[in-house]
Length: 202
View 1 (spheres, rainbow, N blue to C red):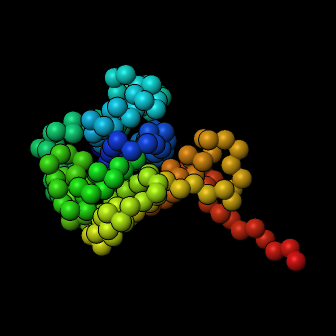
View 2: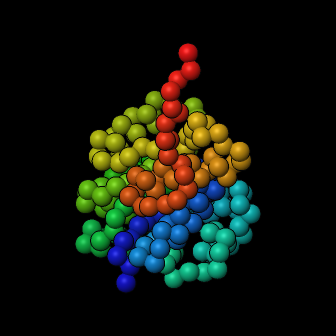
């Protein structure tokens, strides 16, 4: 039985590639980690539009053979195990997190499994990472971010840095995914952390 369990939710904002990388990182973290995956209806369209996935399944999303360490749950199944605070998890990430999902989570609208699991994560004081990907950001979104943050969520914009001199899109995606795993307390070897630049030149 897995000793650490996490929830990954994919909603309809652009950035399906981030979800894929985070799921790959959780798989690589070892057999002690189990992941529960939820995809919103808009998230399914996102996977089609950005990754060419016609019928989302675990193998198509993570790019590997089906694995028993990822369990996919239906977004309308509000009676699933992760809908209860008595079911122990170590945290949740919504990646990408649409402005719609942000608003629902910020105001406690738990009419689907993603938002219900998010509400449970907050009330149990577990890490909830919202990988918001939108620009520019309206006042409504800023207020929703503040409300979510005050409730305990971690607002983590999909904003890769360039100080590690990325050479590819995958480098940029890996940096963001690595930061998410760091926030969840999941070890990885992606070399995404700043080590210092040494003495500054005059």
